[in-house]
Amino acid sequence: MASRSIPPLLEPYLAAAAAPNAAGSLVLLTSVLGTSANWLVLRYIQALLRPSGGAGTGIGFGAAASNPAARKEEEEEEEEEGEEGEEGEDGEEDEAAVLLVSFLRDLAFWREGLARLGVDLEAAARRGRFAFVDGLCGGLFGGSSPSPSPALGQGQGPGRPAWRRPLASPEPGALSKAVLDAAEQLRNGQAREGRAGQAEAADRSSEKRRTRRRSARGKRVVLIVDGLDLVLAASTPRPHAAAGEGPLAVAMKDALMDLREATHAVILTLASDSPLIHAQETPLERQHAWFALSLTHDADLLLSLRPLDTGAARDVSGVIRITARPTTAGIRATAAAHGDSHEWLYYVGGDGGVKVFERGQ
Image (tube, rainbow, N blue to C red; front, side, top):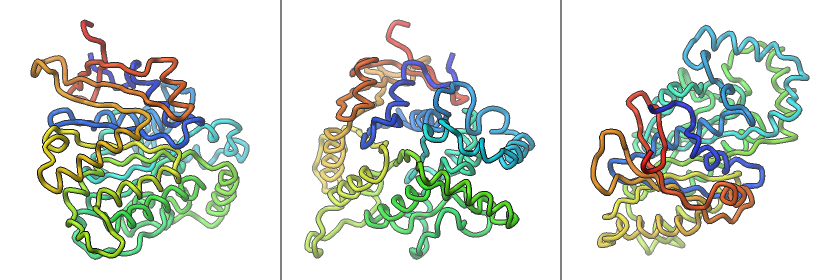
């Protein structure tokens, strides 16, 4: 039976990127048509937003994730916590923050998928542990002229969460700026400021004092980018004669290197369908192949999804292969303890539950 909890076989690999000694790690999730990586990204976010050492409860877990009354009660309890509790002797230092940039799916998709797993993104955002950059509606298909992105704590206008910002443009420079700004504010705990924009002055003052205490420690920001390769397909090809500009794939790779230096770890999803990798007849195919293969060689941890070689099966959704080529201590320790190469089967249920198991089980 598929479970909504994190599959035990995958758990150490999902947690490895957020380990304190895994700074600079690159995790690559590849998939092909028919084996979407959505469920794997959701499990990564679930694992990262879970408190360190906690398997059952945490940010937005349980009743508060789906019950508005319980969520309101949780908010009131958070505000009533004393300053001692806010300093969180070990807890907040060990917690990671997630910055999700999505070019394929909107916020509603991720909110609904994680709610099924018992994770409340809004509760995580209120605690400064989650932010969302909308590359789908704001960057690729926004349909409006680019405008400066306001700070996370200043909101985005009526009805838009303060921790959500649109991407002004899918160009590498705009992507880097949006991610760097959001990561800095998450790291310094500023995403919580003005969470509703209507708090009383005394509450705001208390919130700022707590923010300054968290700023001294900072957070480990894990960047998750879903569908970065879509930018290659949806963007206008660059003329090679442009001043100082090379192919878009090269510019994207350079921007990604900068983002790796500015965040604790980066998790990417890419399409690895055979026509995109092996054919290389069109400029798009050549750019995609170069981009995907270069990132594959750079990755510390590679999780690849593909269908069964024997065809469709009622109780198997596909095959997941894990390959670790660790250059950071955190992933190297995980590979040493749990193995650096595995191939398992997985099944994704209609309710969002997932089962990962070995062949023959």
